[in-house]
Length: 132
Image 1 (tube, rainbow, N blue to C red):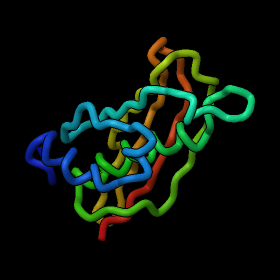
Image 2: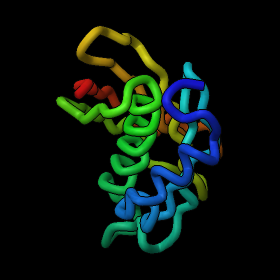
Image 3: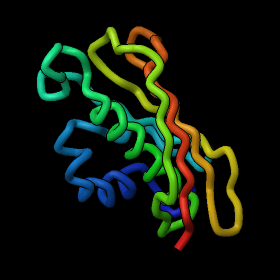
Image 4: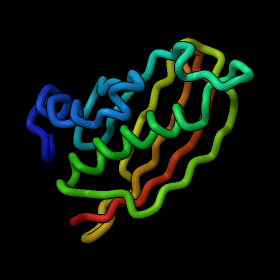
């Protein structure tokens, strides 16, 4: 499976990522090719106008990026990331699917597509991971 032999091993390691886990982000699936994380939305994720905070969406995408990039090569840290917010979520849950676009000698490029549980595209995140 990569760095992590099982999904439970990856979950155990990343439970220490308190910012994401306290925000309600969960690791749902992990293979060598992709990672799926999700977050049930609640009032803690909302801004003053009732919309989902960009930071909540970013946190979900960043967590999926971290898990997949570290499953490819441990230890990997973010060198550069970019997020495009596409649409406001309409559902009750966000889902992030991370896939590896390029796995190089010193860096990896990870694409993360974020959607809601209605199928609406919410954000596109691209991260460059630097392999330590």
